[in-house]
Every structure is written in structure tokens, then in C-alpha cells.
Length: 156
Ligand code: HEM
Image 1 (tube, rainbow, N blue to C red):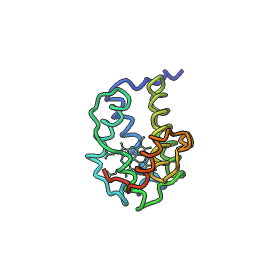
Image 2 (cartoon, rainbow, N blue to C red; image 1 turned 90 degrees about the vertical axis):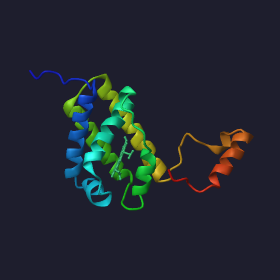
Image 3 (cartoon, helix red, strand yellow; image 1 turned 135 degrees about the horizontal axis):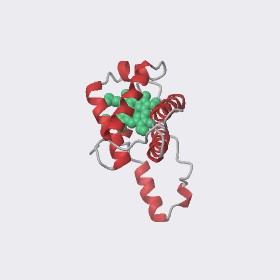
Image 4 (cartoon, rainbow, N blue to C red; image 1 turned 135 degrees about the vertical axis):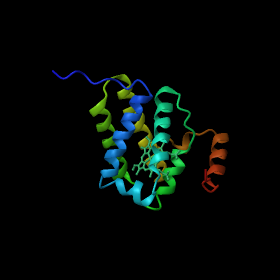
């Protein structure tokens, strides 16, 4: 019988997950060219950044500082960054987790990825949060919101 898969418990596990995920992504028809042709990213700096990102999400260490929303918002005018791409990204991410790990942290990292994919996709495509209704704001909050809406989006 196959022994059960380990859980994601440390940086080494995260490095393994991230390396496997991007090996798949680079080969992928829907997503690979976005990294290599559109963004022309430097993998030597991207991969360590992603180790830190996930270490920060999962263990609150890792020291990731960055603005993923701004990074993806800049990609959106250059290539298709719609639901199809985000659903596919998430599917590949979840499959990579499930192929290598199982347990509480493995479940948690998949839920975090799903939440962030949802938020990034919604924000860069200007999809309003369904839970947010300006009608529910206090007059004070409504005034602040109107002011915010009238300002152009800020670059990071
Ligand atoms: C359609 C789906 C996605 C595509 C095509 C995509 C593509 C990219 C690319 C090309 C970069 C590098 C940009 C650059 O350095 O110039 C990047 C960075 C990054 N992505 Fe994504 N991404 C996707 C979804 C996600 C999701 C769902 C997450 C989070 C769970 C995520 C997290 C990040 C992070 C943390 C960075 C580094 C940002 C920084 O520079 O600080 N990505 N992504």
C-alpha cells in the first residue's frame, strides 16, 4: 500500500511545491506564455519570491513584501487575465498540492490560493464584491466611498 503523503510543514516543502507548480505552468498552453513571453520573468528571482510569498501566507515567516494585486493588474492590459485563466491556474495549483501533500496545511494553502485567485481576478476585472453594497454604508462611510470612487486608481 502507498504510504500517505506528508503535510506541508516547512520551507523545504514549499520550495518543492512551488518548483513543481511552475514546472507545470511553464509547459502549460493557457498560462506558460504569460510568464515567458508576456511578462518575460526572470525565474531565478521569481521562484525565491514565491517561496517567501507562500511561507508568509502559511507560516507568517518568509518576509514577503510585495503587491500581487498591482503586479497582476499590470498584466491585464497585455494579455487575457479572465476567469478561464484564473480557474485554470487554480486547478493546476490544487493538483500540484494534491500530488505531493495532504493534511491540514495542504488544505489551508489550497483555500488561501482559491480566495486570492478570486480576489485578484475580481479586482483586476473590476468585478464588484457581491457582499459590498454602498446602500449599507453609514453617511460618513458613503462620503468617503464617493471620494474614493472619484479618484483615479493608484499605482503601487
Ligand atoms: C491567471 C492566473 C495568473 C497568472 C497568469 C499569473 C502570472 C504572474 C506573473 C507573470 C507574475 C510575474 C510578474 C512579474 O514579475 O513581472 C506573477 C507574480 C506573482 N503572482 Fe501570479 N499569476 C496568476 C495568479 C496568481 C494567483 C491566484 C496568486 C496568489 C494566490 C498569484 C501570486 C503571485 C505573486 C505573489 C507574485 C509575485 C508578486 C511580486 O512581484 O511581489 N498569482 N504572476
